[in-house]
Length: 42
Image 1 (cartoon, rainbow, N blue to C red):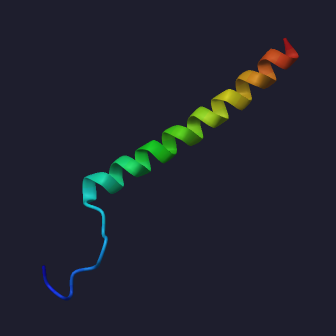
Image 2: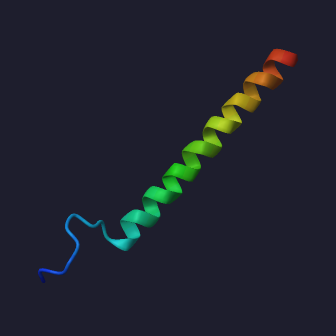
């Protein structure tokens, strides 16, 4: 490991997975809010 390497840098695929999970959780939260609104109106 070189001294110029950044410390505690996650690998590329791990960062991609975290981004995907974050987007998925946001979409899931929005879907739940939308479902609650629909149920409340129905």
